[in-house]
Length: 135
Ligand SMILES: [Zn+2]
Image 1 (cartoon, helix red, strand yellow):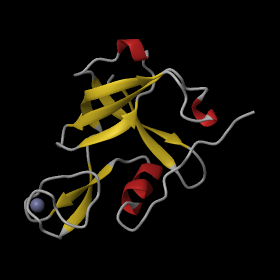
Image 2 (cartoon, helix red, strand yellow):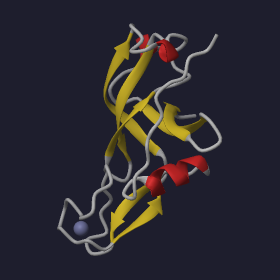
Image 3 (cartoon, protein in one colour):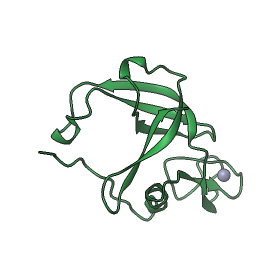
Image 4 (cartoon, helix red, strand yellow):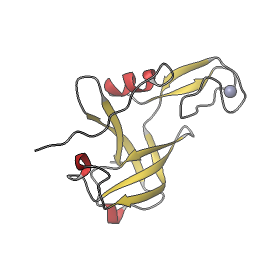
């Protein structure tokens, strides 16, 4: 028997992120004024305050900035995954994002580990970006 995991609830600010992920692309908001990326999505640039933002595809490459290993599943849907690593990944473009790591022994995860995005389809509408060690 499988149990569902909680899924994101996109809103107008975050919908472009989830739509891109469902198409197998990692996109982040970028400021048209100062050209810097940021994450999480906001209505104004956290670097300069401008509100002219666009969604741009990013490399999907980065490194582990910090991590923890989950040994006790937060709900039944995660029992098949434990133990697994949850990491803050520093993307090459600058922003940090929190994610689950896959295809790696959690005991071997280290700060600075090079990682790349992968996508896990959850249902007909939702695909989650996760990260795995870079090839
Ligand atoms: Zn800006």
